[in-house]
Image (cartoon, rainbow, N blue to C red; front, side, top):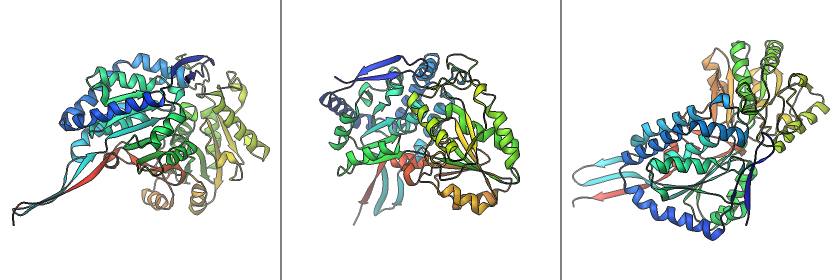
Length: 460
């Protein structure tokens, strides 16, 4: 029997462990979800929406436990209060648009014909959720999938082993039927076998590029719908007319919050030569104010990374860049809690270029590189010199200029004078190796349902 463990970044202990299901047991869970789906879909939309929101409310009632569990599982400081703001905002927004998003598209209604397109639930949706924002990333799919009439099977990352279990418990206690929303503990081999067997009607995966490739290989030939949000190397571009203090505050927060473990975190910044020196100086001062330490301490503002191997990747990229000529500007002596393991000090590098993996490969840690640029054209070329494309943050007082530049950037979302935010009214999507598909917004509902056309001839 395979035992799945969560190794806490707080102290390296085994915080939680669960036995992985065998293939037969896992298939039985999926069968329960499939059996429950038709009756769930037949319930009125208003009832499904209401039950989902009751599940959200029930999870909020568990906030004290949730926040502590997150600190132990993936290192986020308790002072930030978990993920409830975004979790609630996304749930409430998709609830508010569900009726219109799922309404039939009427083509004709006359004495002779009635023609329309309905949105029909796929069936069983499989959500494979990541550890970095384990509740918010999961709810992006879970809430609209359930509202649309699908049943959901969720598998969480081992680093946040308890999240799927708690999420399902909250929804079940709120009245969502037990077999409508189910949690599973699976190893990679069983997961792949289930997907290859065509067990699911739609799969949503958030994680690494290699993980996404594994999902696609397993699903090959099954014609299962797949949504993928994978790696990122999101850029910021600060123009000569930008609000300097606002840019520093937002971009440094976007680069280091959650120890830099954000899907749309800022990992590289290009600054116009006229603001470059001031931007770098202010950024170093901003980052140096963090208190790195135990996430259970309310005074801690920067916790450990979720696992020491993730921190090792960050350190290796920094060391490689410095060996190639980059300069590290943040004094490590300011962060005595940096233990060479999961606890890692934030860092800013200058004199960087795209020959360094630090500026081209996903870092996913509290470190960012800053480059000087002379023009919009140079900045656009550098921003597009990436195999990823989730978001890009541009900073200027000229919205028209920002739009023109945004049109040239190969990315899923363009931000003006903000960064690192998911707007539930907009489609969350990426290009290139960041993945395909999209969640939230009206488009998210469309991806979690299929069109079904009705051509009704009422008279001859």
